Image 1: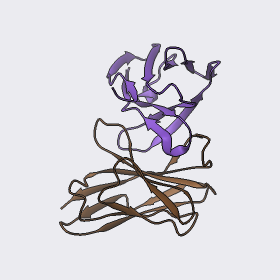
Image 2: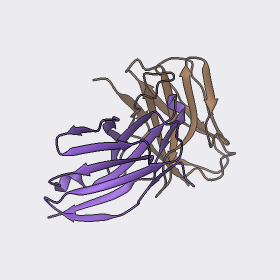
Image 3: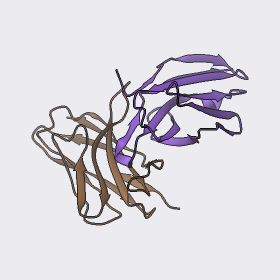
Length: 110
Length: 114
């Protein structure tokens, strides 16, 4: 079993749609959680951290469920510019213990 | 602007040749990392350094070497022992030495075999 698992997609959605991604992690000692965005042939960029109480940044909402060991990302009112691969990232102490998921591809179409 | 600079963007390696990828950061971060990304896969950790003059092997260190003589610089050498070097190489840094803060990435180097 992989330490961090994501549905690879692709998710194809129309502009304005709401889309949600889930990610599961296997290490119950995990402490920090993040979502990154990676455009084609570019570096990953931090989208948002994920906090236990859930957090929102504009159209993006992240949730953490420690009991079930998954995190989620919700994107509302999708834009064409949201098309990218979204990486789920989990850390269990120290930067070298950061595990990156393989990513979920999202295509937003006009 | 603060950031991480990787060079070159594209690199071609001949068989039997060692090549060095540059990574420089001006974020004053203690920790630096090298990752390899292959198509459809997550990032895999090659080497990391939490402090100057110290570095540790990651999950796939064989065929690679690094140095950390300055806080700002963490070059990666891909040696001839690395038989499948074609990949996207990403350098990252973070301020922490153990608190799991998010990492920030350079824009990567694509390495191919000639």
